Image (cartoon, rainbow, N blue to C red; front, side, top):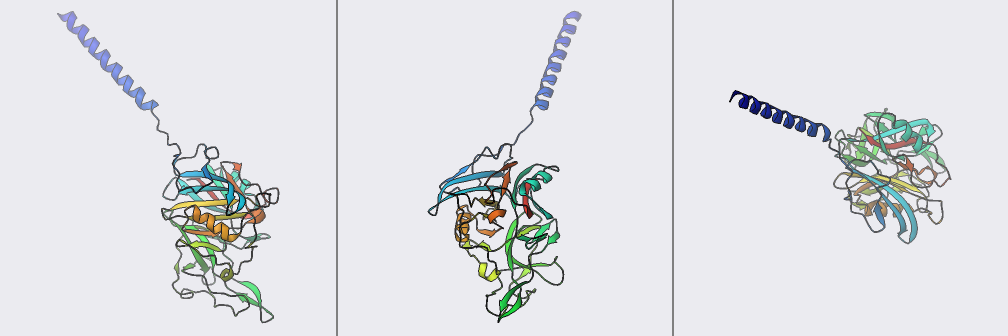
Length: 337
């Protein structure tokens, strides 16, 4: 009887030891993986397709789309990256180099600190300086241009345009506006519900302030990129190149870059190839239409032409119209936070 009990106890102990080991093995080997979803983040119009090759290894909440077909009567090639601004693991970052770097170089540099999903050229620039806003983590590296000279009454005259900009708040929520850096510095940025109504060959509007144009408020973004002009505002195509005093071959077909977002907070960045027949690019009106077709309710134009370039997952997408990537002063980087 004593031997029988001892044997039973031994069997029971071995059973529980086996179960414990099995449970431990199951816990340590089950590592959850979050793959990128195959359901499009935005409603894709005809001709667009999900590109899972470029997005290989991307997490849920960020996707890549490609277009190589006819858009508004013309052969067009374009790439688009869309990501959910509510995804706390994805960062919108603006970068700047007065010496100039290609988007590929910006992306490579940023990948040293964390995975870069995409990088697109930023706003307008001249030799060694940006004419468009570059702001990151509440630090303004360059303002939207505060004054420019145009001829009025046969004299060089200063104008003070409110130009378009795109930014994100501390929670990652996207925003666009016609903005101006109020006061003597660059840190106090106001956004206005409409552009200051400048008109060439007419007297310039007053310098923007907290009260002019009317309805302005402090633009509470932590990171932002400037461009011009506005393409879409509050669901309506509203191209304000005249008011923003920007002349960039607005009606010609060329390479274009843009950034915007939809009503669900999905941020969309777009690069359209140009200067490479039959892919000659598109004009501003068609760029706005394309962004609207990609669900954007708000969008701005970025620098285009030879500056247009977008790198996705380390791969160049559109072929630069200059033949090789142009060095630019600013860029937008979408990366792992």
